[in-house]
Image (cartoon, one colour):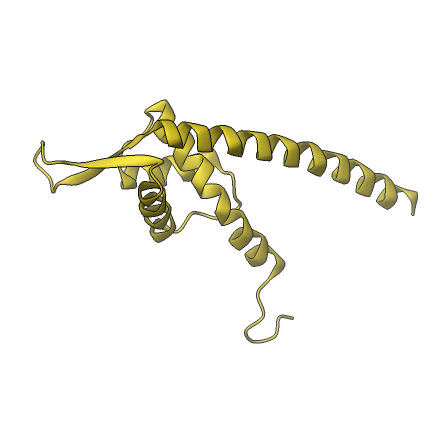
Length: 126
């Protein structure tokens, strides 16, 4: 039974994995799979780097931060029948940032795999 105000383990993991929104957004912008926030949100959820659905506000916060840091640039798209949309594009700074993320994630994935194997062996001993 959870105490009032106490997050479940799944909630804690999901909140920590929310940091993976940034590399997912950088990747998607690099592939051209999405160019504006709504499409990015849908595609980030499809990548399933986290267990929970991504909060739309988190994607827009990441986009604003990346733009401030020069990793993406944006422009308004007023074509079409709907409201204007802000389209985002990856910059060279963003590509370098994605490369750094790839290195970190690959190292972390290897370490996590080794940990899972060792923990599984420990659990099988009992």
